[in-house]
Image 1 (cartoon, rainbow, N blue to C red):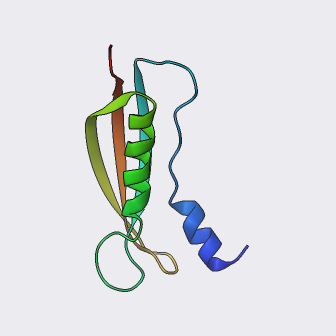
Image 2 (cartoon, one colour; image 1 turned 90 degrees about the vertical axis):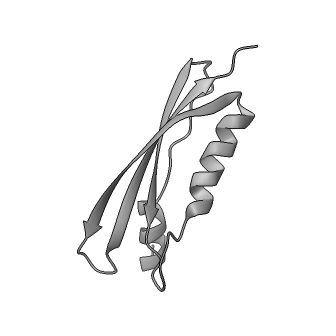
Length: 89
């Protein structure tokens, strides 16, 4: 497992179970681009939202918290916590 594999695994999101819950809570860690500014993985945030929409959920609430990483190739991290609500028929 190389350095880039480590960086990729640090920035992942969980998926809702196959059960029919009223609400699902997910977190996505957005990492700063290695070169330049902005987030290097906004596609993961978009994918998490779209995956829940396909399962019949809508984004109800989103909040963020930021942290600075001082490690090798650190960069800032933003933890996005999202609450999805089941769409009623």
